[in-house]
Image (cartoon, rainbow, N blue to C red):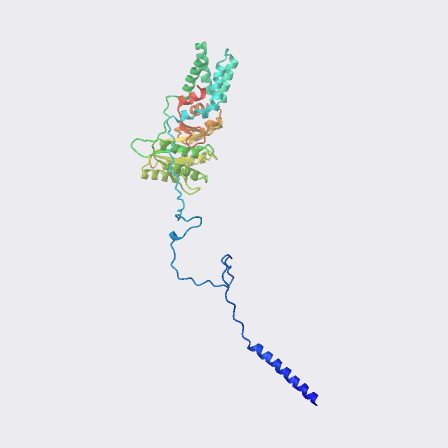
Length: 400
């Protein structure tokens, strides 16, 4: 009996102890947080995490930009303004006076083939028939043309026979005189841009596409500006997409205004507007660049004829300049004949004369069309278009 009572007492005590532990664990308070540690000034600042809130800004006076030290030094640096891009200035073309003399080196190929070739043949001790045939062949190869060649050979024969002895200086003088006669020194080669009693002078530029017609029109504008004229350009070649852009670029470089129309538009309408605006602006010259398609002579005639008629509602044309590629030689003369039948050509511009050994084309084209060469192109530079000077040209062909 006593044993049973003892067991019951022990069980009650054990249950009481266990119940006190459970209650104590429920009422136990959490420990206070440890005091914050001193900040480590050497450690990098902690990176913010997603969800962290920004610290409330402190109420401090804000500093101006002048008070803030920029990285890399204590001195205050002024804020740099972005560079100002200036529009390209208007170019001043090279003077035209004596331009051909300055470009005479460009005629070196023609000089070797024509001038020096003839001097070498004429310097032979015996001028037999074979030599004269070689002289004639040299002239024909240089594109002088059949009739001018026969005339020159005949005159050279007579003068050499009279001359007797032939020193190099005498031969050079003889050849110079005869070539000058063929080229012509009495012809008026000035480009007509100053009609009496009215303004502006009107110049139409014609020629087959590919001869440098539009480029020549732009270079001619530079020639006129260099001589003190004011210019308006008419981009009446509306059938080539790049022609108007190309012409306007040339005009912008020298301050010339360009009148243009829609692509594939009416060329006569553009030409009419160009002359109209030229009159309103009071410029000296209007240059009209035309299309150079040679699909059919009838179509070309209709187109250029219409441009001419429409322009002449304002005033008559003062010049019709035909642009020819000197490297095409006798083939160029075929083109020249077609244009001469369509419009009244008043002058010739020979381009690419620096790239050919056929300087005689100057003589042939004048004889074929009966109009003078007024300008020649001797390179791709902007100022490589020169007024034609017969004496300077012949001197360049035969050398010093």
